[in-house]
Image 1: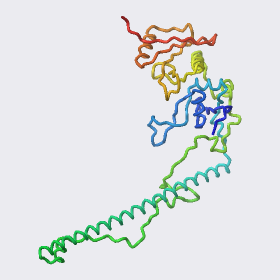
Image 2 (image 1 turned 90 degrees about the vertical axis):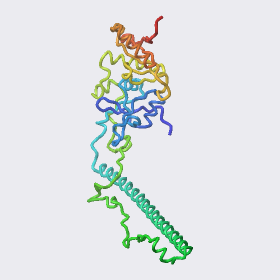
Image 3 (image 1 turned 135 degrees about the vertical axis):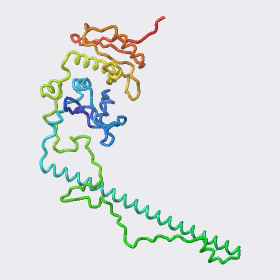
Length: 332
């Protein structure tokens, strides 16, 4: 399904962190708006793994400010968008939940019954093959006794004693799994029932009592007035937003640069296809102090990580950025 180019991405804000839950919005942000963010979703039983993460996507504050100021996204006050549900809505949701659990348990019982049937058929085949092997051994013993002039019957009895064949039990085995009686009381699920809990990716699509009406803000000023967003508040934060926007407008992708001693990593294209070329450090003012040791450290660290270090000077009055790149070079 083609995405609506006029539709704004909904950034759901909680504790002044902006999350993106919809898969379609994730694709729009990356492919159309050059905004990557960081996936933070994991599984309950694999909470320590950090290789294959999923939704939600959490955005850097600079990405949020950029998207809202460019009218590409709106901020949603997510806690207040979850209204108190009606009793009828809760009953409907609970009925759907129990119906899904029942379907899961019924499917698992069918699979378990099929596995048990396959196991019984394999056991019967093994018994039949063992009887055939015993008959062949008895025939060979009788033939050997005849060749030696002995009594074939006594020889077969003395050489080979057939193993008693287990007979199927007279009672019918209980093929019902422990999950058969999974309902207790008035529709509850028994403690021993095994099923999967599905967490909806988007509350707006799954929950009837979720509504963003009256909780959406299209400007940073409105979000600040509502108390759900405060970034930027200082000169340095404004400088970071200005540098981020300038690099974004020049076609670059940005990511967090704290692991490389800077504020941003600057990519020439999608980070899935390219390595970053620069580690950007933001300087909040043209008159800000920059120590020589910092320049040396940035140059050596950037060269060690095969990147150039980019010093980004922000002029808050002119709303302009000046760039200086540092690379370590040998002398002589």
